[in-house]
Every structure is written in C-alpha cells, then in structure tokens.
Image 1 (cartoon, rainbow, N blue to C red):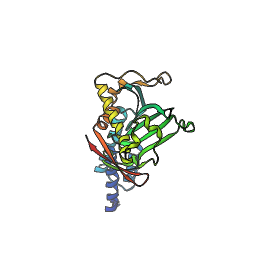
Image 2 (cartoon, one colour):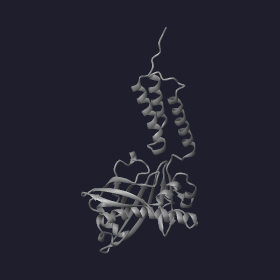
Image 3 (cartoon, helix red, strand yellow):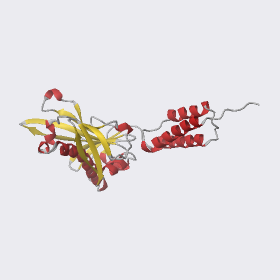
Image 4 (cartoon, helix red, strand yellow):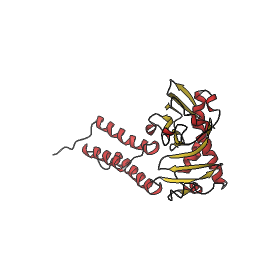
Amino acid sequence: MAISNVPTKEIKRLARGLVEQLETRVHAGPPVCAADVQQARDFLQRNEFSTASDYFNRLGRIQDWIATRRTTVPRQKRNYGGEAAGVWMQVQSVYDHLILSTCYSGEFHSRPGRVKISHRFNQAGRIDFVELKFLRSLQPCLNGALRKLILVHDFQHHRKDWFEAEAYALGVLPRELVFLFSDIFRFPREQALAWLINIGHRIARDLLSDLKNRRVNGHSVTSRENPQQLCLSELASDAVALPILEQAARLESNVELEGDEGAVVRYVRR
C-alpha cells in the first residue's frame, strides 16, 4: 500500500511563514500580486499539502482580495491640477501613494528663480521624500535638475503607519528655498528639515479645507499642455488620494540629526 508523504514540521513552519507574510503585505504592503500567490501555491503542492488545508483556504482569500482591489482601486496614475489655498498645486494619485507638488518663485540678490517642491506621501500619510526641482535656478546649469531634500531610507519596505524612521538629508540645502520662506536659513538645520516636511502636511490640510468648501479653482496653468490633467476639484471622489490626504493632514513631524546627512524623522499626531 502506498504511503503518502506528510509535510514535516519544518516544511509546515515555512508554509505558515509564507502565507502569513502575504497576509501581512495585504494590509501593510508592499502590494501582493497574483504571481506571489501562485508561488505560494506551488510550494504547497510540491510538498503535498492537502488542497483542503487551511493554507490553501487562506491563499484563496488573498486571491479574492487581489481581484477585488483590482476592480475598485485605480492602478493608473491620475494627474490633477489647479489652485487651492492661494497657490498652484499638482496632485499625482497612484494606487498606494500620492505626490503633492507646489511651485514657488522669487528673487535672491536681484536674480529671479522658480522651484517645484514635491512631497510624496505613503498610504498612511507618512512622508517618503521631499524633492526639489529647479525650474529656474539661481545657477542656470542646474535648470531641470532634481534634488532629494529628505529621503526616508528604504521607504518601500517600511510599515505604512510608521512613527519613526531613519532618513537621508541633503547636506547643503539649495539657496532657492528662500522662495518658500525667506528666513529658513536662520533656523537650526533640524528645524529647517522638519519645516520642509511639515509644509507638505500643512498644504494637505489646506487642500482638504478648500475641497470641502468648494474653493478650488479649475485646472493648472499647464492643463493646455497636458490635456489628460484632471480638475483639482475631482480629487474629492478619488478613492486613493482622499484617504491619504486625510491622514497626512493629521500629522506633524520633528527631525533629529545624525551626522552631516543622516536624520531621524519622528511623527506626532496633531
């Protein structure tokens, strides 16, 4: 009589860890795809787990979640533009994060300049990075260049609702930041970095307020060049962007320096 192989304790431990890891990613990220589930199924089948086992049932529930998410959450980037809180804004909404951008211009020693500041927020409203783009630099050779002012280390693999994370901070902040706040370089470096993060959270609050009170103003000035850009008011019905903005609006951070380019970002609820 043939005797069927029974998975060992070690194989069962590996199977349990594999399924639990996928279940954790369903809620905390990174996103689970169909290939991840199939690899887990292949492992169970190679090791002769019963298809009636709890492991296969749990994989089935994960597969159902993927199918539901695919039909309810827009996976393509959606680009919004317009004016709110007295400034031009652009919001790029992706399936698990958004990028909120604003433009600032001014003069420094009689030289004009213009920059775009972008804050990328994760699914739980935490900052992934703050980026500056030189639209018109005080040094023309930098026109079009990008600089990560603050970058959370390995942000793709953090818990989405983290409250403390190590980050990279640009060693020498661009002079063009005076267009945002004329006295920014009078403050200690850690306060300046925290301010750069928190203006993103403040802008999120202002945008939500104007959306609620119907004070947003049409498309951005570049909408003719980008006909796919949506009116900023349509954010109110975006199932991805709106929850992120709501969570970002409730947060503030402080920054502790670690060396010339190291930092720790800590969140507190408002």
